[in-house]
Length: 138
Image (tube, rainbow, N blue to C red; front, side, top):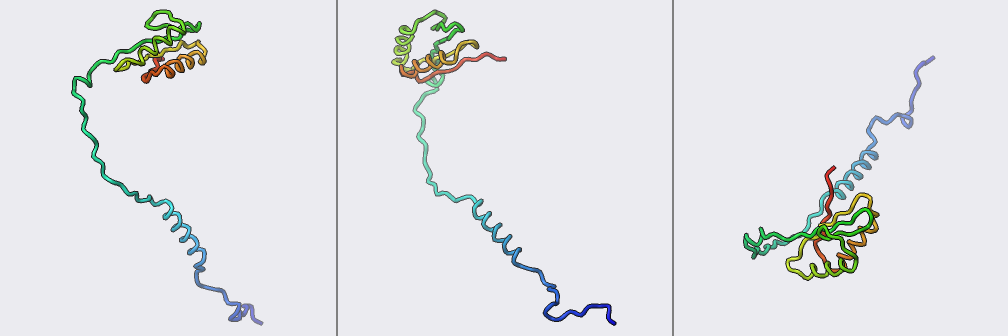
């Protein structure tokens, strides 16, 4: 009576490592590294032009114009009340100046956003290129 089981050659357990999952993982890693590798771009050297501006021109002061939209919808130009038609004329006037003055736009906290956007659109349509927003520190 034998307590141990006899194993035929065909039923014998495999004692070697199965390489198929290892090869699969290595191929996936290879594909990831190929995709993640930065693409080498071709480039040419470009020499930037030298500035033709003097130091005094760099420090030249550009005029700024204050434009406020009040909570009640009233518009102020340099602290003076102004209507829409006069605002259009003033904006067209500063758009023609060289160098163009900087427009400092300040909207009250309670003013509807639509009113500020209307003033911005007027400035853009008039040709004003420098529009800055003025805010208050908290």
